[in-house]
Amino acid sequence: ISISDTAAIAAARYSTQQSNCDTNTVSRLMSNNCMQCGTGSIHIKFIPRTLNIDFRMPTRGEFIRNIIEIPSTTLILPLQEPTNRLPIQYDSPMIEKSLDLPTNEKVIEKQAVNMIRIRHKKMKKHKRKKFRKKMKFIMEKIRLKRRQKKEKLFQAELVAKIKEAEAFDAKEYVNERLSLLNKKFLQRTYRGEILPPEMIKQFIDEKIAKKEAKRNKPRLTL
Image (tube, rainbow, N blue to C red; front, side, top):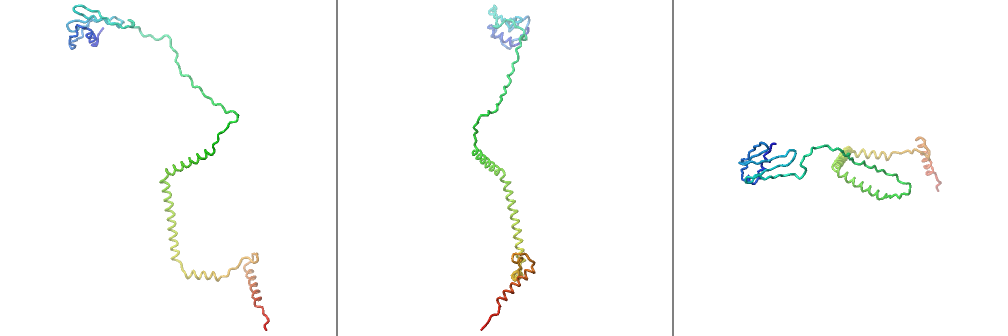
């Protein structure tokens, strides 16, 4: 059985006589389960199928038998598959919870109409403030366009009024107003009846002639 350098160092450590040996001169010479260190030799024996190591350390011409044993069993049992296989344990299935329908008994409902209404008002106010904050610059652009449009319309009205004032003729305006003042307007109805303009004019002239005749009635003078 071959022995590594680690076993050689362990054997040299357990030896009291070979503690003065230089570790650099350790050479592996294996023959018949033997190892030599320096001038002397250290016999290390292995028992087959065990973990026992026999260190025969010499002291002044005599060998001290030092055996290090593992407290467990001396034989290494081969690995065997278990004869009884344990069943695989799975998690228990989830219990489905069912909700029963409410009973037909009288249930007192908790109504909070006023609180819900107040809550809706608060939410609307909050959403309105949030919307205004989000659309601040967009609404400002829309208002600016509206002001510009109104300003353009106002400027167009001013230009139209200026042109109308420049084209105004005072003399023509006075003559037009005088013609309207001297014009006789004929009524459309006479005594609540809708008649042709010629008949209405005739009736009016007759009425005026009667008034004049009554006013200019001849009277006796002294």
